[in-house]
Amino acid sequence: MLDRSLQKAETGAPKRMPRLSAMFETRVMGSEVGLWCIALLALAIAYTLQFQMVSDEPVLRSARKALFNIAPIPLLGVSVRVLVRRLILHRPVIQQVALHVPLSIMFSHGWYLLVLLVAGFRLDWFSSGITISPFYSGATLWQLLQGVLLYAALQGLIYGRWMSEKIEALQIELAEARRQAPATAPAPASAVFVKAGAEFKKIDLADLIHLEADGDHVRLHTRFGAFTCTKSLTRYAQQLEDSGYIRVHRSHLVRADEIVSAEPTGDGRLSIHLSNGRSLIASRTGTRAFREYHN
Image (cartoon, rainbow, N blue to C red; front, side, top):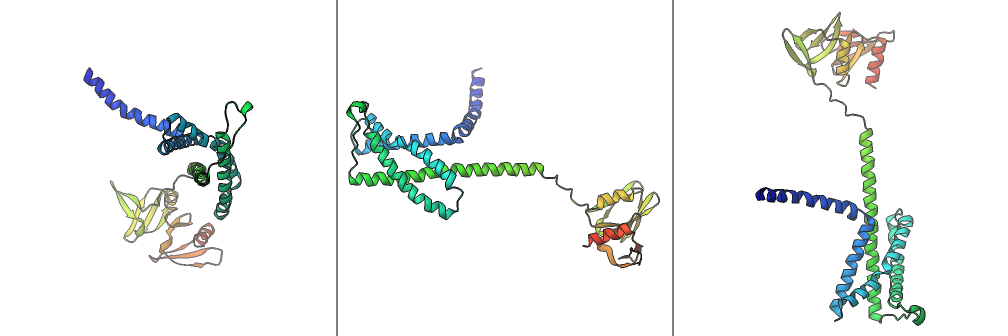
């Protein structure tokens, strides 16, 4: 019993893990809000570690400083997202680049000012007020540079999501096109079979010159002689319609490649001469079929 339980646990664990992984990818990673939350969390951890490395202070104090830097990003990020998706994404690439340069500068300065505002905010702000003190020059330049980098990272999320939506829409269009597309046409026939006694004889279409209705039978004229079968000429016409055959008369079905020449008979019909020396008079309907085939 113990061995069976262990085997069941071992075989069940790998199945459960991919299932949980798939749920995480579809529900969290596939959600734009989820991606933004993960990015902000990663950024908060990075800022906390940075403050811990440059100063000897409690972790909570470093986390508080990280929060000052992170807090303005959602507001600015949502504003930039709306602006980019509505006014920039559908423009030519050169125009997009030209617009992103001033936007990145505005984002960087706006983020810096909001960081100063959040850092100067105190719980007793109603009585003591808000004190805003800028960073020293080196820190200010570094903060503005970080703002440009943050703007670039936000564009990565925005453009990545936009491309994902485009790919999903294209996949839906392709699936709909496949669903509405007609079924694949069967491949043209390459041979026919004729019953000769108790067996069926295969006749390659390359050797078949023309078919002729003969009462209740059909005679197949080939390079090696003629064969008779009980299959109707209409059945053969349906089978060979995509294999280069023309029904020039209700009693004659000819292979187009075996027609040597055709000449008018003077009454709206054609006299068709075949490679085996046979000449056929096409009906008016067959004459039209001949002309349409060669147009």
